[in-house]
Length: 116
Image: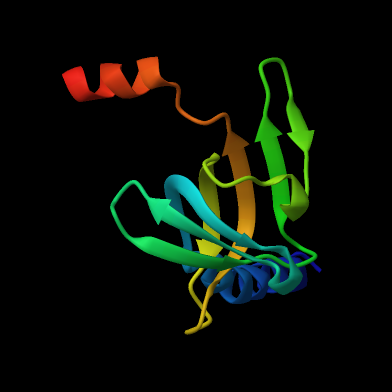
């Protein structure tokens, strides 16, 4: 029995782990939102533009002062700062696993960043 359980666990890990291997993460600013197509575009902090697609499995949270609040694509605004975890399996767009929305940078934060 122990041998069967161990074999099952090994097979599960061998098949489940590659699915998570393609997961990536980026930070950036929301540039465009197309709610009808379930997509949004982010200008990454690395300078690249990313086209993301959300689906029913996507988790979205808004980073509040005291707690994280569940949100949907309609709550996303251009200019919002986001951290996006995604999969690059589709050649046309990136599939979002999780989005965390942060308040837009203030002028003071932007000035402090330039000084560094």
